[in-house]
Amino acid sequence: MFQLEEKIWFWALIIIPVIVLLYILLQIWKRHAQKKFATGRLLNKLSPNRSLFKSILKLIVLCLAFASLSIALVNPKVGTSLETVKREGVDIVFAVDVSRSMLAEDIAPNRLEKSKQLVTQIVNNLASDRVGIIAYAGTAFPQLPITTDYASAKMFLQNMNTEMLSSQGTAINEAIELAKTYYNDEEQTNRVLIIISDGEDHSEAAAAVAEEASEEGIRIFTIGVGTTKGGPIPIKRNGIVLNYKKDNQGETVITKLDENTLKTIADEANGTYINGQNTNEVIEEISEILLKMDKKEFEAKQFADFKDQFQWFLGLAILLLFLDIFLLERKTEWLKKLNLFNENL
Image 1 (cartoon, rainbow, N blue to C red):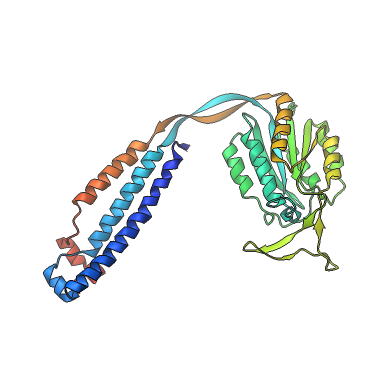
Image 2: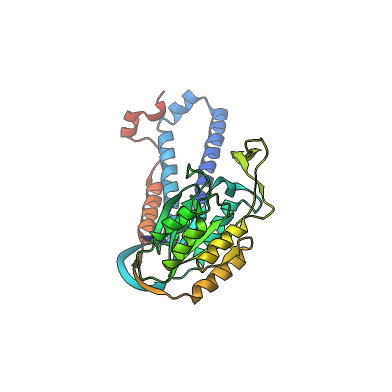
């Protein structure tokens, strides 16, 4: 495991394309100036040891030196040992709707991206809780098992899209059934399932399955994403809207937020329905709910004793700078034999 202490210094890498650009401009100017002075054949006789390869090699060495110096300033750290720590928290499973209706743009930028933003912000506000992620449309698919690795959770979340499941629809009941398998402690009382969806469930089993989940100690909170007025489902290519989804009669499909379904599911599982339009309100309400819940103690492993590694990159940068200073642009005997770039012609 590694950490980057000062990521802002990655901006120093901008100097590398600047150096390359200056080198190209200098070579163009030198060639233009040399043509005024003499022909190429005469220049080869006057300065037979000129080497294009050596000048390019010096440029590469200089760029590598600045890259190493930039990484040294970032100061990467490596975790040298794992330690077991005890934490108290709640197990939270996020079930994110990835059906095509989530592409509707009645809420900016669209329902799916809004869902990702909501889950990301909730995760950012967690302390020691464990999280898991489920994607569902016509079927449910496990994305991430229960973990304390929030970085992985956010990475998996960002990769979710409407093409990841071929079976379309909104089978909330299957997401609830799959969530039941996420909790590994039968005596656990702090099980939370947060369903983020537009509520357009095409099955009637969700409420019954939610009631069963409640009997197993799972509280379900639903977050509605979209508007009751609704909107069309765009069909895009390269970010450009080509058309809108149509039904069998050729009419444009208007998908609407079904709050009643989401409220019913939440009520059956001792939870609450939350409208997801205002991100800050959602975060505050979820935080208050989690704060009042009983916390479970569990063990987790994490990297400890992070050690600085900047000295290796700093040493490499100094070595490369010295090499660049003593690396001449003139040909050496071995280079003449190689005859790179046909320089003797």
